[in-house]
Image (cartoon, rainbow, N blue to C red; front, side, top):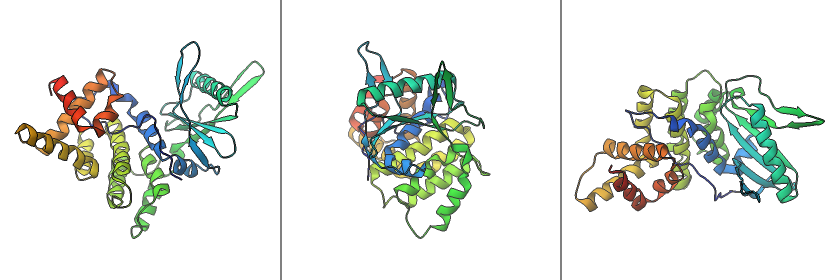
Length: 303
């Protein structure tokens, strides 16, 4: 069953080779949320046997007008709601109190039990999964990505080269940069991009672009300038890279100018960085799918 989300979906955060900003520190969190676009497959890969009925709203608004944004929430066939949070750092008591508050509000709103899963990419080996206050103990279910060997997953893809991957195959591939293993992140990302290229005729263009965007976002967050250059070169030959290049060519024809592929990518990257600096990250999705609006913002920022 395919879950189509009408929620925040991260496209790609491209890196300006001359500038890295603190605003990209949330890139990993955004990319992980995008991975949840493949909700049913992700839940199965995580070892949860129950089936998803649909994605539930994650914005909880109470009378005091406090907005709480959960990462992802699914209504399950067993009558429960499964709440997912993504954490790149060690889990603190403050985090657990926040998750408990989300759970309580969601349970009251839907009159149903809620279980919180925390998918953590931190290097910390011993993560806190509960807090006790008064007579009550609150507990979450932890999934530590570093406990999974990314090399074994990538090796399985090599063994199945004659068969195209399906959506269930892709989920662990997208998480590979955050897992454990002998190989470094650059190697994993390049192999993952290669697998996605081989699957471009299996999935829709939209799905492929989302997958490539997730991997590229991780590259921006974790790799240095030299390693990132290799990822950019690989991405330039994918559907995501072609989208940026083709849109730039089309707009260039309308305006009577020519634009190189690297220049088009740098222009797009610059816009992403400026939107991040201005706290307009909600527009990143829109500019990735709306060429006309993207051009309007180019003009607004004088790019």
